[in-house]
Image (cartoon, rainbow, N blue to C red; front, top):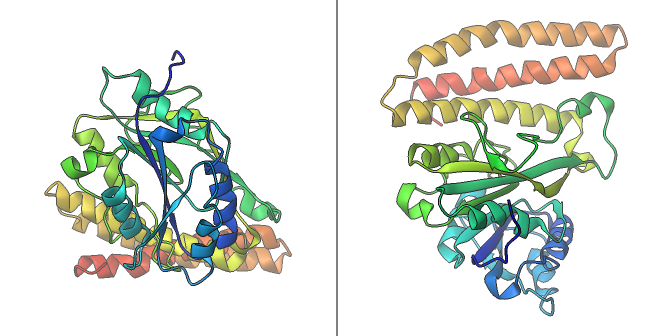
Length: 318
């Protein structure tokens, strides 16, 4: 795509919860963006953070781009995102995590597909998200993480490819048209419930919009030591399995299908997988192969997430 001067107004929205230290680093990158400042606004959506998040935002009062602190008291990342949509004034709204490190061209590059393809219905653009580990990364955890690498150049994604919400831009007008984020999904405090971007992307595709990937819009996603512990990785696996079940049931309900067959087949499979992976983990620990043992136990715990959520979904509970 050819380089052109930006004309679209943009809102960058950062939902945040209890990460004031990392949030400061994210804002430092945002206030240095090379996008025209008169076309750019920055919203920090504080989702009941018990730390000094308001003071961190206030410390940028003299920055080239002054962020606006917005308190959203309904707990949950998607409540925060929906509040951001209601507050935003830009043509484009970019959602970023509160722990990303970005280069000065991040906004420009993620907006470029909207700007330079006016004849196409570009509804969303995902930027590249690359995990980094400021406190180091145990070898057994490294295999669970990597760049998205959805395509090597800017362009539309294939069906089934969903960019991460850590760096994801939307045409703002599509939300009133197609629906807002599902507040029963997404992180809620300490619950790591994922899949929050899936429904929004699905609605765009069903509405005739294209979803693009922009690898030049790079965001480094910080994974501190607290997120590489066995306890955290195990919990993340459990909650991720639950979110997959909830997301599938939502999809089936929206399309008028029954989820019973899917749920029962997953239930049967994971009844076998959970003890099988647990036994494999135990054997690896007995053989002093702790890394392999931890990976197996994480897979067992993911199966436990399915076994916990499927009966709840069968009786209509989240």
